[in-house]
Image 1 (cartoon, one colour):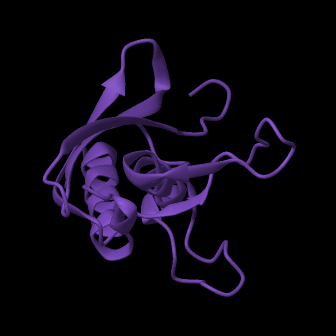
Image 2 (cartoon, rainbow, N blue to C red):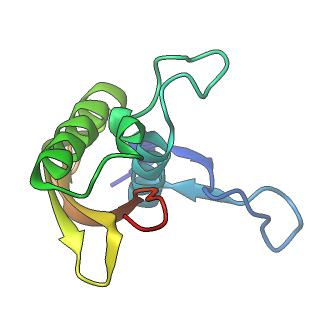
Length: 133
């Protein structure tokens, strides 16, 4: 069965392959990389696509509270529903990181529409805290 409909693109982060060309990613790996790109991009950051990205970056100076984690969950799911049409059954859960008061850990579960394959992705989001807080 051909999986070419899942997509192919430049690897993220950008790297070179064994021949010195741009490394490519394909299929499920490409979907995971695209999810990371969506979550890692703040709206307004891309010149010709100012709406692209995830509003989670609005929380960078927020305290690591239940309210902030709930907003992070909402923003991540909202962005994935809007910008990644190849996935379904998206669930996002946010929790604090016991090792870092400045980290929100997003646990993302999704299914690839075309194959109904299920995947998990853990995405750390780092809050910027001022000294003494």
